[in-house]
Image 1 (cartoon, helix red, strand yellow):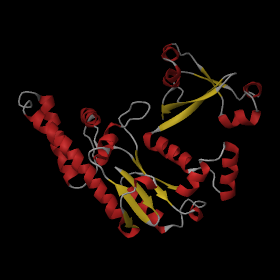
Image 2 (tube, helix red, strand yellow; image 1 turned 180 degrees about the horizontal axis):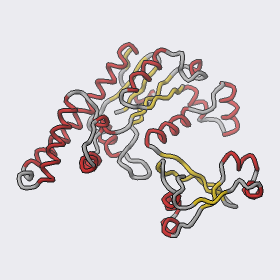
Image 3 (cartoon, helix red, strand yellow; image 1 turned 90 degrees about the vertical axis):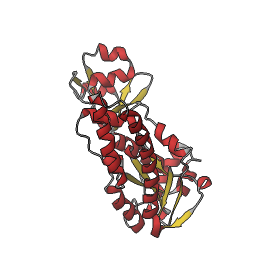
Image 4 (cartoon, helix red, strand yellow; image 1 turned 90 degrees about the horizontal axis):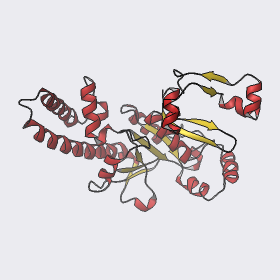
Length: 289
């Protein structure tokens, strides 16, 4: 499913043979089961346009398409497991979960809002990899005038934000025309261009930030004499696990880490000066990066 929310119209395409399957297999770089259903398509992919007055109805329709797809998966699983459930308590427990989940979906709810009763049920849910269990991001395509205040005065953007609250979706504002122009500029020109518009980040930057938030990811930096690199980890990861992102040997042999605040490092101008000012500290295995 691909969706574009516009301040004036909504354009969407649903292809249950190709796009729905693509959503199902998407994973993050960390190979976790959560993924992003990024709701934006370019003009070349738009197949039908509706006035904004019916936007939320069309979004609900797309949700129903995804719910039906999930129900098909669960019904096939239930038919298979039912035959083996008579003498197996674990399989019987799974069948009970599937039946409750099917009723939940039949009521028009998304699987992401289903409350599991224990860790076993959570494990089953991850195994099913349901479409409606995945986080969703809405990209609101607005005019250049609405970028400076992030669509705060655009009633249509506010309608989408209000709608998204019930399912904990991310919403960010983008101007497709501006993004096209930015893509043709180098870094220095891009910075000046954004400053002239009165905005701090591009739509692509907003997408990356929204993706990290909705997946519970953060980046931490390592710096050496030849390069500085960013590493993606799950929010709440402790220092040994973060070190393991660089190399598994670092996690197994972790003792301590030297840590400096990024802003302090920039203000000092170098790692050596930050160390001289006592801004570099030692952190052990319980340190949350």
